[in-house]
Image (cartoon, rainbow, N blue to C red):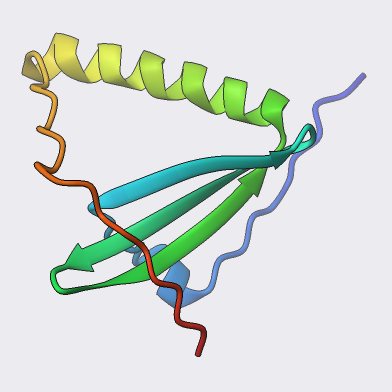
Amino acid sequence: MPEQQIKIRAKDEDVKGKYSNMMQVMHNTKEEFILDFYFVSPPEGMLSSRIIVSPGHLKRMKKAIEENITKYEEKFGKIEEAMAPESSLGFQVENK
């Protein structure tokens, strides 16, 4: 079977990326995981992006991230894990 090439298009604002300093992972059914990325600057925070993926795809993502962390640490040295916040954050959802 010949290799298929897929062209990927992106909007200019998406190419710039979005900063996130907090993430929440949830699963609400057997079929999907929800990854919410936030930018939090107390006393407020904002949802930057929500990604919904299948469990199988999330496993592939985990493997890709682990491989990239290994390559990064081989090149630049060990990454020190960031400390968790001292207190838990409570969420109050505000839809706009």
